[in-house]
Length: 172
Image (cartoon, rainbow, N blue to C red; front, side):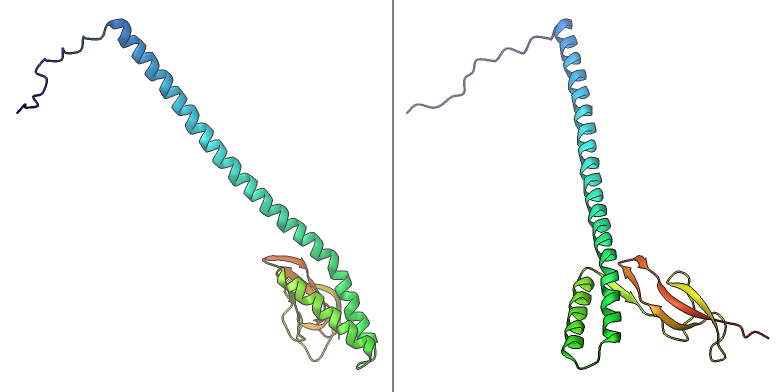
């Protein structure tokens, strides 16, 4: 039977590095450190670029959505006016009403919210635009008396204020 014996010959210890080899290692280490720093900076720049492009894309989508919806608001207003002047129960009135509801649903799907001012609501300059002042015995000063045109908000941004008539103090 033969035994597997490890090689008993000793491996000679490595020779001490020369001063030239030590200098080459230092230069290589400095160059590796320089490349590592460049890599980290480039990775950070790429990450910042991705974030900026994402932010710009979201901003462009939001801006485009606002522009398209704002361009459709006059059509929605005209549908409302046409409904007010068409006889109820007629095929024309019913058709206009269906188109209006369809357009309102489509715009709501994109986040459009109508701002309605009821008579008696306090006038809020952040939501309302006063287009006239009315002397009213029924309402205290600074209160909405009539809504003249709906306002709209898209997400947290006011697209168009609600146009209202506001009560003012009784004249003497």
